Amino acid sequence: MSESDVIIKPKDVVKEKTTEPSMYSVVLHNDARTPRAFVVVALKTCFNKVEREAEKIMLEAHEEGHAVVATFSREIAESKAAKANDFSVKHGQVLLFTAEKQ
View 1 (tube, rainbow, N blue to C red):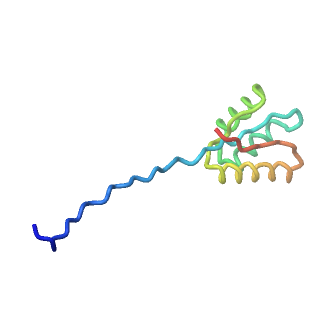
View 2: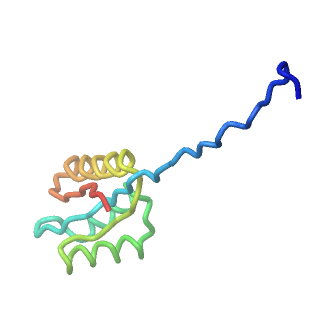
């Protein structure tokens, strides 16, 4: 090897750590004023739930005080909860949905 020879060593491979985004659950909160039938309609309209699944979520919220509707990234969960709350208010109801970090 002469002085003009250049030795090239491969750079260390750097692996970037990627973290999964935090997930948020859209939570339905029970209240004493909103009719059960409206809760089912809201779940079907705002979350594309089928009748049976909407009824199951509604009953869980009624019995437990709250129920997880679905889980999304933060932005989507907040958007879905806001859309469902707007739907509720538009129809004269007080039904409450929140986005909560898992």
